[in-house]
Image 1: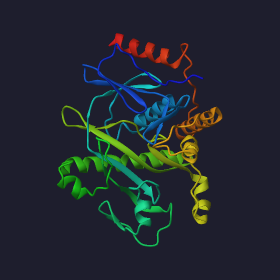
Image 2: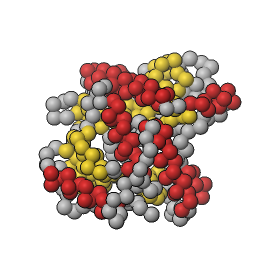
Image 3: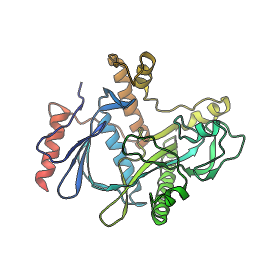
Image 4: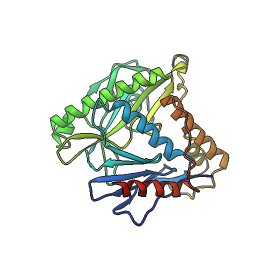
Length: 316
């Protein structure tokens, strides 16, 4: 099993360990972001999924390159298939979610709110009589507060964003323009691959000049919902969810067997982990149209990452 569970390098400065990423802030204003194979859910690490870090990094790379004409992004270099060097940014306190369909399961999703009887949300109005997973007349932005201290995100309207001083009116206009253009490009490219980009989230930050820059990841299976286009019409008529890249095997398996927020997590079967890995790879290949070839260099992924990162730093 070639997995990257950790990537802790004491020689590198300013280490910050996220749920799935190892981050190092360098003196030159860049950040090394290493995507491990850790799978996070229920505010815990459940397992490690082989090749997950590579798949997500390479999927985001595909989309960063496909959208760089729309807005600037944080990418500086890719020293390794699971590593991106990005420009260090001040992350803006608003999470931008763009939705093309009445879908979702979280407390802030438009479908959840719609089923509760709300028709006005996020500064928008939706008509009565809409069905689960129905295509919206136009893609909409559903921003939420980005709580950095572990609090719960909450829906916001544009007036609230500006009124609370979270963003200036100019920043909100730029974010909105970028987000809708990125989503349109994503839907277009997905349609060419027989997919529907249903919804996605974007994270933006500002650099030392105040320039708004796309950060984090873009249109990956973890940040976006995709449906298989050929399954949509029949599923919608039946009131069912269209086929998607269902990679939540592990999450569902755990939730059926314990209270994942309180109990000890039971040992997860190897076949379940391997099935999840295959889904991530299938998603990458369907989204990008490229064959996934894992990097099997060095004795382990950790040794490969170490070699490539320090080779990059020595060449700077």
